[in-house]
Length: 70
Image (cartoon, rainbow, N blue to C red; front, side, top):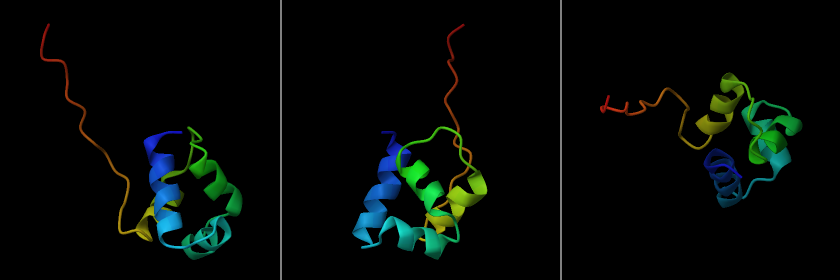
């Protein structure tokens, strides 16, 4: 399971939410929550951000250090 999936699952459980409740609160489908927690590699960013917003977070670009050696 990837770290993103773990983050969502842990925050959902900490918030005492079922997958159904999280889906309803975020305005996404139950299937999406299940796939998100299972680490599906292709997911819609707008839906991800709807879920993350419930936990005070959002997904965005993260700079990746480039190899400075040639």
